[in-house]
Image 1 (cartoon, one colour):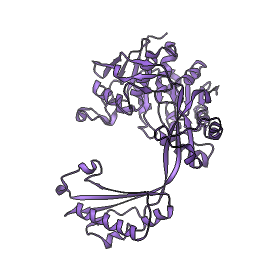
Image 2 (cartoon, one colour; image 1 turned 60 degrees about the horizontal axis):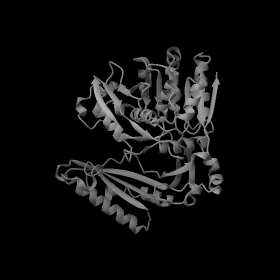
Image 3 (cartoon, one colour; image 1 turned 135 degrees about the horizontal axis):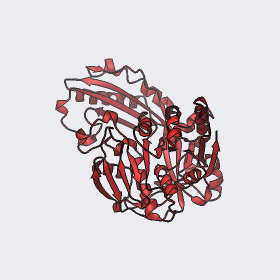
Image 4 (cartoon, one colour; image 1 turned 135 degrees about the vertical axis):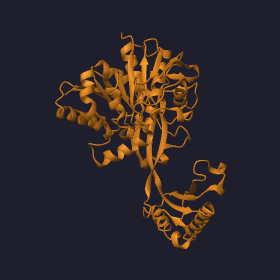
Length: 453
């Protein structure tokens, strides 16, 4: 058993800083790197891509990353774990193999975790009494079934550990929990038991800290953000993990950013719900048990974590078409910029009503005044300019297109001092809505394939 392992965060979402994984493997020692690419909306985007081209459906950015770092990870023996496989992890694996061939890299062993895509089985599952109702609203799946375009189970760390045990140097998954990407190497290297709940919870907390990339090392920091050094060259966080379940959050020397108890606390509070009941497929972690201690420059010790048994259900993330939206903006200049923008909004709404157009929602924001603070906004007298942003939503695409033809006329038939209409008429966009559900773990089994180029 190793004395410790260093697990680096290389991506926090699809579209994150492309230099981060390169820096993580080149600027200091790491044993593993996790790359988190997925969010609920990401899966639906990938599914749409796969429907157009069966060779797509994964994070294409991942391939360009491997084109750069594959020689480094092979030479240094770094293992990479990523959920960038999206809805097509097999195709993602094949694309990485093509990169390896171009770089003349042989004997590369890649593991794939799949089986999370249950879209083809939804009706069969429903016929067996697994209704997949909306866990937040109790709505029945039947109400949106015909519009569902993706349905993926959140697997945990266990199938990733199996791939590592089969010798995979790279593990590509579909919809796996963000935390599982970090927990898996800790379980594998330290031979933790799956019912050692405190240790499993510790690895889960480590994963939660790493999952958003630079957000744990000074990015998006709401504390003394001015004191965070050199954000242009931010170093992404690294978990230095130990067999007893304790770990230290740090980053490579001579990189920008900041790792402190304050930056780590902010990430710990990000997207958690009930802090005593952080539910994953692997355990339930109690975030109120976490102890943090600054033990050096850019070094925060995390200890004392407690956990409990995992539930008998997987979470399912589904996406479905839910109508259309259209957005447009106009900018109004001083004097009386806000009054002009409000009057333009009034005129537009009256014209839409006169046309008999029906929308589920019309929302107007006045950027520079209330787009962040809503009804709490104040100090309108100080505004030199206001951007009126109007959005409509509904099922009728024709109504959206008619709305788009009512924006430009405001320029010459509304309040004065308007500008900013350079993008042309807004085009309706499909709304992809989110549907969370629960599914018994007995209903689906992860699949693990490991192969060598």
